[in-house]
Length: 347
Image (cartoon, rainbow, N blue to C red):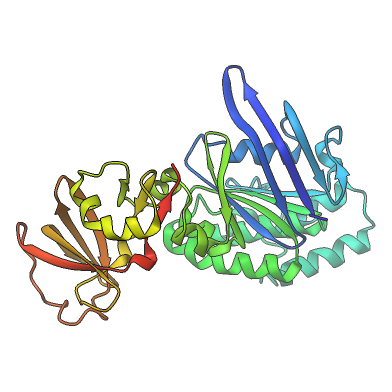
């Protein structure tokens, strides 16, 4: 049995549909990220699980218990938000033990759990500090410790790293995943940042207009997006309609498309599918260079094929002769595409 089951849940605010018959299951100890643009419904879905909003339809159950009429404080959930919502007049230890005090746990148990949480988030010796004496990263770990101190059945996280700068966010992301896995808590994590979702999620659920477009492990989401929306949201822009046979790019891909038996939908050519070197099994693509930029770990090449502009990411350390090579706009360039990376999209 799944630990969290969301079945055909819907929520509207007036005429605006925020969540549209969304279904999702999480296994015990699994981290699932809700990923999508602002307004796609991911935070609303999180609030429905928390009981902060009432669903218009569908069902939500946690550890086999129907949550429909269960108030938030009785659901056995921990919550962590972007603002952290720490109490500035309390010490670190007092913040961590707040939920335990509200549950009227024995003082001895509270002290023990606070010690365990300080050790878990590597804040030993800082229990007596005031919140304003901590760095942003330390405050984030206090908020996490507080949300885990009550041993919740599930942890809900809404953009928990969103207020941090990029460098600190990337450093704390790995720490956060290690902590969640060490505790073994089931977690539903909301973010609009794909690298964050890929870095922490066991699976990623991409949302669009209140619905879940695709849910899969991170590598599958990126390499095998199911729809044009998912591909575009991930920045995979080389998407072309198969049903336009007179398109220059489709004409060059026609032999491969015929082998696939496809004459409708769309095809995605990922940015990593191109090479400058001819090898067996690769398809020739004749292009006109539009721009070239060396970015350190990769080189970005934009080119024109007929009426279409494409973008490719080349590895300068694997492509022989690429480093130092000068591409000028208007140059004719032959690229070789690996069809094993192509993705056929249904819509």
